[in-house]
Length: 434
Ligand SMILES: Cc1cc2nc3c(=O)[nH]c(=O)nc-3n(C[C@H](O)[C@H](O)[C@H](O)COP(=O)(O)OP(=O)(O)OC[C@H]3O[C@@H](n4cnc5c(N)ncnc54)[C@H](O)[C@@H]3O)c2cc1C
Image (cartoon, rainbow, N blue to C red; front, side):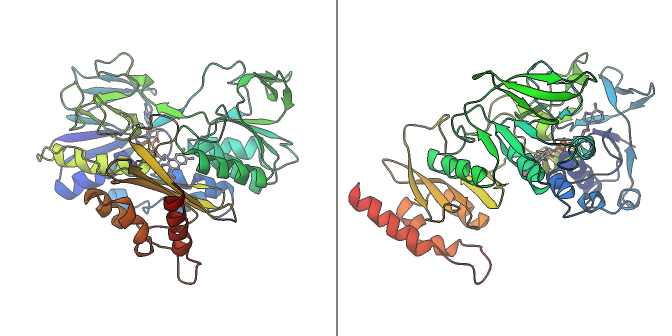
């Protein structure tokens, strides 16, 4: 029986396994070093914040895998030998495969900062990071101040986590305004204010120079590059992005760039080897998308797609319109289609922006400045329906249609205040003053 081996038990590897099982009776083994069972990485923050236990982040019961004849192997892969189709493990043993799926996810970026490997310095990615947080930042007696380096989605999650335990946080952000490479200026500035309102010491245009050790090899301070200021701290969170976790492929013949290089069918250059999820890098980006997509739902889509191919129905990865969601403390954020921040905004892209007077809700609609075609929308603090925007993007609706029909999209629960009238009034106001 054909043996499918998957390295990585995250969302992409596990989705591939589940779908291969639905489609076939092939032998399936998932190898992973981090945890025995699949868990939801996106829920890690809620464990630290006391909303759930770690067991609750596991979507499947432990018996599920045996019941579905999916073997789980807790091992760390050190080498892939494709000529003999063998994986080698750090424990010294090995495993043969007929087809291999690489689904090894990401690792937090480290940019060679002096002191980056000290005790009390870590990223927020793996289960072990959560365990280390409990050691170095369990409360504000042991951790009198934490410093977070890098202002993206994981950085702000970590700030929220530490804040719930009353640990003072200094947040170093390289950009002049929070996440403004991605968010348009109005939204980015609203989030700056929201962060500061939570008494986070937000330092914009600030880079880390070095991390200073005490005499036991543990962090005791950081130094800021621009000002030379030293900030005493007991914990440093490195959240300056992630990159594919593929160092174990260094000696293999599987082609890599930043990630494992794949074509549209998620096939690598090596026969019977595929890559999916955060670690996969498209040779050519799909539309406006990045060649590496480190988000949950694309990992799931790639897992479903590769399962089809492996089971004989060779299928192209077609992710459709871009969407994503996240949270900035209490403010929920959704994005559909393309609304560019400072980075890479095409000349044709114009924005309509509305912000509520309470400074916690806003929307930005991107449209083509000549044709008024709807290109994308960002919403903050108002929930909107994914399927409707997806349809409107496919139908190439225009700006006027989208603004006039926003009430059809609102997804906030009953009795929540609605803002469409205020948005339409602002739209008409901007039209007449334009
Ligand atoms: C704190 C946090 C919050 C996030 N929030 C969101 C969110 O709100 N929305 C969103 O879309 N995305 C979010 N993400 C990103 C999302 O979690 C990832 O895109 C997704 O988990 C990637 O899934 P994956 O299956 O590709 O890889 P992973 O989940 O990283 O799984 C890969 C597994 O492979 C294992 N592995 C790696 N190398 C080896 C090896 N050599 N041998 C054996 N095992 C190995 C790893 O240990 C890991 O268990 C978040 C990420 C983090 C860290």
